[in-house]
Picture (cartoon, rainbow, N blue to C red):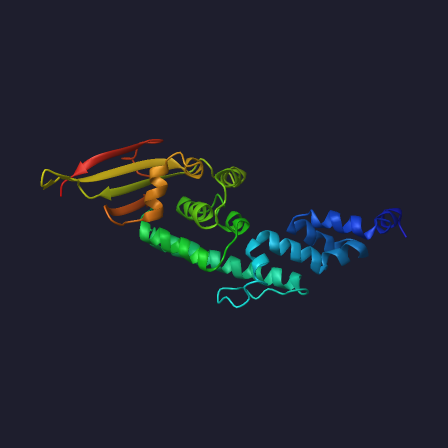
Length: 253
């Protein structure tokens, strides 16, 4: 036996397991091409159970709510590696479907808020986790409108703290990408007369949205076209928007 193989074999099982449990999925997969000890760890249910529950935290609730219609059929004590692979493929397919929907609805480089919220609802229905969003929706090659859908989903549906979201945006090199949000509000009543409708626009970066530096924009995106807000539109770029600030004008009724 080679010296390196003797060193690897001499590692106590509990220490080797601890090392493997600290690795990322790609690194764990690489163990499969190593010596017998690491190959056994690569196929360990305990390792893949930990990876699955880290990526999809809601799995920890499945045993207590197995009767729920939205529960994913997760294994209890075995088959976690196969489950992880199957779930990853499902998530990839769901993310691709949402990406195609956003692309179809934004062929003019703008997205109506109803379609924006529909895309987020689809992500929620398929129970994507924070790491799934980073993996599939925070890619620099994705349309910034899809980046925004992922960001909004993480903050309002998953409840991910803003500092974690902005760290992920920076890691994926998309934090400074910008969108222009425009919304039209019903004119206010003044002494029995309704004033002209108001048009608001704001050009803001994904980082600023993650850190809630433009809270009004987040509220508008979350509520959509409702009550006094007649319409909300998100654009990739718009020359009428003023970078880093919001502006409003009155439009003819």
